[in-house]
Image 1: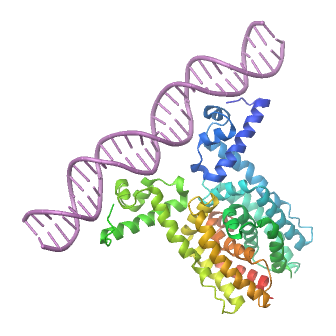
Image 2 (image 1 turned 135 degrees about the horizontal axis):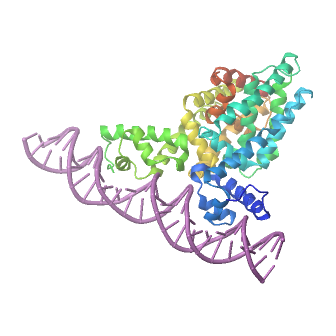
Image 3 (image 1 turned 90 degrees about the vertical axis):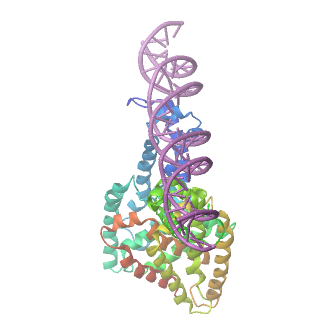
Length: 202
Length: 202
DNA sequence: TCCTGATTTGACCAACTGGTCAAAGTCACG
DNA sequence: CGTGACTTTGACCAGTTGGTCAAATCAGGA
């Protein structure tokens, strides 16, 4: 395995190729369903060569999840207590939906992990995630107390945003099967905006 | 493998025990993550004995999915064109949420399958499922045309109900991690009813 | 009780899978 | 161009897993 010196050109290229391939495979098959050989082939490397860059299959998975959780929470971090409440919320919803459209593999990687009980990231959920959500819920409560958005259960409000937006990535096949040819992302933004506008307008 | 004669007492008992165990294991680990040995142990049988009742691991999985899809669609089937529109919709949402609470393993089994591209039930999605949804969407459109519920994209309306309700089963660990000790199902029904009442009231 | 078909299992197997290792090849820089 | 570090790989291994099979055991009707 490469030392801790600054990574060489080849290390950078191969590590990136591996993570890209691993994301494809893990998100489509889950951790247990993915094989190291599959990832290697997809990355254009041999299996021992993969394991030269990452010490184990689990290490690749961890690297992906770590990188993921951070970007995944970004849209919520941007929620600004100083902004106009309804627009802030609609902006959050919009950003979250765009993430589902632009990063469906990441969404499915996450979904796979959570559905199976989050064995590898449970602590991140109760710590990082909960902390951030609690903080933002406090903002929501403030807005509700001031009558600037309608009062609803703030945690369920956030859950609803997660589920609604991620559904389009995680259940993509089902959505497309039902819609026939129509592109879900052509019509989803308007529907979802309407939904939250009606729910939250005081 | 047992013949096609009427099933014996032992056959009934063991088949049921196997499916119950398989549901536990598949829903928690996914198809690839589950092992036949695990299912056998959970069912209190030996591995060869399992394979005496089901010819393969895949056969158990198929048996579960088949049984599942039917009951899964029941709440939607009950949507009645003759009823009062808003109450019909709220009733549907309520039934769907109760299924998530009462049958979370089934929900996760389904989620696992869909997230990974529905390799085993794709045809059921484009046929059975799509047919039923199209039929119910026609009812929704009728109600909207008559101004009895607010006009919104009917397919997205249904997707939203699926995602919102199933989220509580599929992402159970996440929901509970964020909520701390509070029981999600204590407060979810009210939130969700409020949401759809505001969205759909003309 | 005896017999026949149903049920159960220990022993086994081939394929797959994650991971190792020593040897060979390549790179970059003095 | 030589050298030491970095990179790549063929061969291999041990553990796991889905599935088989012949033999043993059991259930229940005649």
